[in-house]
Image (cartoon, rainbow, N blue to C red; front, side, top):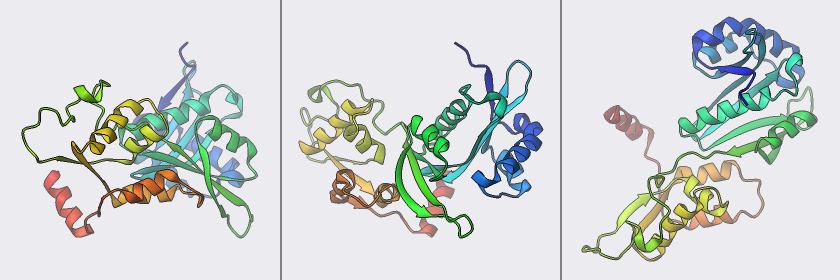
Length: 265
């Protein structure tokens, strides 16, 4: 069944609704905190504002403002008009963000929610977010802020591999005429695919099996560890401990990265 709502993300579509976005944000300042009016225009210009409208009459139904830097996107505000509560529009906005973040190769999405906002916490948890840590809020409200994270199904380096047996895999040691092993730098999703038994778990398992039989060499970047530690709640974490045992490549210095970006561009 098609949705009653359309999600707008391009500048031209979003701009006519900026006034309604600002009015909604001001009405929910206790929940959202304060952002200047110009911030919403900046969100729109950067294509980081999603607006939901009713297809029947183009009425404003809600919005989602987001940001963040790879590998983690961040939800700043999610709002649904009172006329459209419990219609599924909030979930539609959130899933639109998931699609955008995965397309842009983000690995996760973070949302910081005050502990007393029970409905907001239930909404995010219903849509795959899990609490990973707490921190004190501002001095005025004295709230506790609960960080929630949803891991994304961002495509990994090994998506092109069919889920055949290891013996049939191109990674297999059988048939090799050289002693030189291929080296692969894997991202965090390969480990999550396997450890969390996600849709690509079989393919990820084949990759690690190939490394165990010495057909390939696996390594990670220091950013891999940073991403896991960002979502770590301080308790036992076997995935983090396993990652720390893998060979690591350090992220180059900023000057080197800048040069590499120019060459790639």
